[in-house]
Every structure is written in structure tokens, then in C-alpha cells.
Amino acid sequence: MNHDLPSGGNPLRDVRDRRLPRVPGPCALVVFGVTGDLARKKLIPAIYDLANRGLLPPAFAVVGFARRDWGDGDFAALAREAAEKGSRTGFREDVWARLSNSIRFVPGSFDDDAAFDKLASTLVEMEKSQGIQGNAAFYLSIPPAMFPVVLKQMARTRMCDNSVRGGWRRVIVEKPFGQDLKSARDLNDLVDDVFTAQDVFRIDHYLGKETVQNLLALRFANTLFEPMWNSNYVDSVQITMAEDVGIGGRAVFYDSAGAARDVLQNHVLQLLALTAMEEPVAFDAEQIRNEKTKVLGAISLPDRLEDYAIRGQYSEGWLGGQRVAGYTDEELVPGNSRTETYAAVRLGVETRRWAGVPFYLRTGKRLPRRVTEIAVVFKKAPHLPFSSTATEELGNNQLVVRVQPDEGVTLRFGSKVPGSAMEVRDVSMDFLYGEAFTESSPEAYERLVLDVLIGDATLFPRNEEVELSWAVIDPLEEFWAGSKPEPYRAGEWGPRAADTMLERDGRHWRRP
Ligand code: BG6
Image (cartoon, rainbow, N blue to C red; front, side):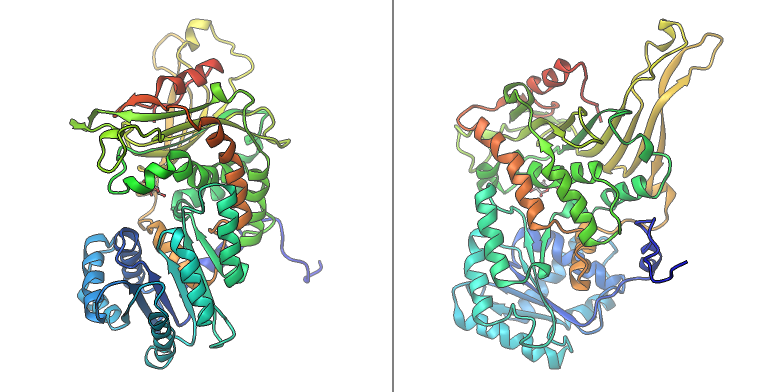
């Protein structure tokens, strides 16, 4: 045996190494837009939870940057409140005491040279005071319109340059990754001009969800599923990302985006890519991103968009026993808005594995419940040796990956109903994370922030992925432009036209 050859065969082979907690080396995390919603609700709690789990290095610092007349103490107070409210692992004074020692705040606006000079000198000073060794990640938790000025400042002060302080410098970019293919390309060029590609981490927080990563384990660590994971056995795939919430306080952003740009372009297409991709030759960033990229590049749109690309907008209705307003009555939404809050589309994946298998995607706000799932629907058995009445209630076998809530996997198949007659009906076999494991799943942002500090880009989409996804969305937006979305009542499963779309194909949506 040639021991120089890689061990090969098992793309999950480095899982063994990952059982040891991965702790980053000394570093700082700089957050732009630290007073915003994302920072308060997700980032700061994630940083606190990492500290509580012992996953931050002793030499660590968090630096907030925002236009507030604040000192370190004011920012620490905001961070404490955010950690107390949002922590998953429970707030502990001793953990907080250690973390709060490493908190700094730099006040200033993005066009203020002096503020950025101060930020640069703070990072240098913290090499001594905190031992961060010149390593820093910059989190752009700000609207993309602000990117150019912030990136320019980072270039001017050379904060983005790995060589200046002899450490690493990384940038974390949040969605939206543009409005369309062109703006995404411009945004990518802008970031790639200032940082080298390997130092750019684009966050799609769905990839940080445990259940989404489990899709790869399910497919590539087992014998059971993969032989059937193709057009010989699969009838269709349904990917649902449903939310019961409305648009919250994000009317201005949401009304300019809509459901397709907000989540179809990123979260839902990433779920499709992981479902449809081939086995990577290694479980690493490059190979996994290569395989996802191939899928995204192979997506085809239906010929008749009028039948297979449906969008909707919620009107007033009832949800959870409460009356909720229609979309156009939400605060700051124009009364004549034509923005969609629901989108459903049928896509194809033009590869040998998936030729002819429809992928039905749907997402919406103010649907009956919050649920994200991937359902692989198998073909019916080619022959049923029972009387036709015995199998009246037998549906297609299904494998359902429940991304959230009730995280787990369900297998649906036919089983004999007890009794003297032969009657076959669908039953479910369930795997539930909450029951199978004692550890609770980390929040997506915990995992992703940690990965950035470690330098592991496996769970971050590459710029080609972002651009290929826009190439799917752009024609849909173009087709929808100027038309009115179909109405659906808040608390219903989307517009009637979305049901008709599946009925036309002899199928129906799952009721998750
Ligand atoms: C965000 C979208 O990316 O994901 C929001 O902008 C959406 O509109 C959110 O509500 C859903 O995330 P999660 O993790 O709650 O499913």
C-alpha cells in the first residue's frame, strides 16, 4: 500500500479530528454596525455563548464600531443586555466578567478618517494589552450601500492587509449579497479588491444550522439513502421555508427585496444545492463548494413561468388566534406595494442524477407555522400485489429532513393496518435530535463566527455560488416585474395558484 496517497473513500474522514473542540488562536472580532438588530439579537449572544462554552481563546477582543457618542462601558452595557437576553447557554457572571474585559468601542461614522485611524491604532494597542497578535476579523453588519466607504477606509488604513501586522485579516459579509446578478458582481469585486478571496466569508446562516449540515452526514455517511438519491427512484423534491412571522421592523428593506431575493436566492437555493450535489472528494471548503457550484450552475427554469413561478402577498387574516394586518397595511409599506411575501417555483437540475426530477421550492411570510424542511418524495412502487382498496391510502415514500423546528428526519412508508384485512397506510419513523442526543445544537451564528476565527470556510458560499444563484432569480424577477402578486390570507399556505402549480403536475404540497 502506498502510504503517500490520501486515505480517500470517505469524505467525512476528518470528523475524528473535529471531535476535539476547535478553539481559534489569539484574535479580535471587529463589528461594524454593532448597535443594529443582527448584532444585538444574534452576534453578541453567539460571542457570549462561545465564551461560555470555552471556545474563545484567552487572548480575544471584541471591538464595536458605530456612530454613537459612547465609551467602552456603554458598549459593554449594551453587549451585556444582549447576552443576557439572547444567550442559549445561560448567562453567568464569571463568564461575562472575563468577556467584558476584552470589550472596546470606537465611536465614529464611516466617512470619518480619524475614527478609522483610531480603530487601526486600537487593534495595534490590543496586540499588547490583549495579546491578539495582529489577527482580526471584520464583521460588516451594515447595509451593503455602506460597504464601499468602509472597505475604502480599511484599504486606506491597511487594516485589511495580512502582511502589515504579520497576522491574518478576514472580512465577514452578511446578506443581502446584492439585488441582482450585476449588483452582486459589483459587490464581490469591491470586497475582492480589498481582501483576498480566501479571507472573505459570506454568511448564509442556514449553512450554520446543525440539521443542514446533517444532510451531508445523512447522504454521505450512510449506505441506505444514496443509492436511491436520483431520478431512478425520486419522483420530486419539495423544499419549504415557511414563517409565521411578518416582516417585523424591516419594512424598508423587505419592500425593496421581496421573498425571492430575501431567502430564495440564498437559504433555499443553498438547501437545494446540498440536496442535489455529488459526493465531495474531501470534506473541505474547496471540494464542498465545488460540488454546490456545479449544482447551482445546472439549475434550469421552467419554460412556462406563468404556470411554474408563483408569487403572493399576504392580506389580513388570523394567525395563532390573533388578527394580523395585511402586508400593505404594515407600517412603512406603501399601500400599493407589489412586493411578494411568498414565492414558489419549479426548478430542474440538469444532470444525469436529476434529469426530469422537479424541485419545488416555496417560501413565505405569515404562513400557518414556522417550518423549514426538505422532502424527498420517492416514486410509487412499480407494482402493488394488493387489491386496489387495500392501498387507497398509501402515498409516496418520503424522506423528510426537518431543518426546523423539531429538528430531525422522518421516513414515511406504507405499513399494514392491524386487523384481518390487508390494508396499507402511511406511517412515519422519526429521528429527533432532542431525543437522540444529549448535547443541544449550537446556534448557527455560534458555529459560523467560530469558523471564521478558525479560518474554516466550508460553510460559507463562494462568490460563484452567489452569482449563479442570482442567475436563477433574475429571470424570475424580470418575469414578475410590473405584475401583481396573488393574494393569500395571512394564516393560509400561500396563494391558490401555488397549489394549482403542483396539481397541474399531478402532485400536491406536503402539509408540514
Ligand atoms: C433571514 C431573512 O435571512 O432569515 C428573514 O432575511 C428571515 O426574512 C430569516 O426571517 C429566517 O431565519 P431563521 O433562522 O429564523 O429561519
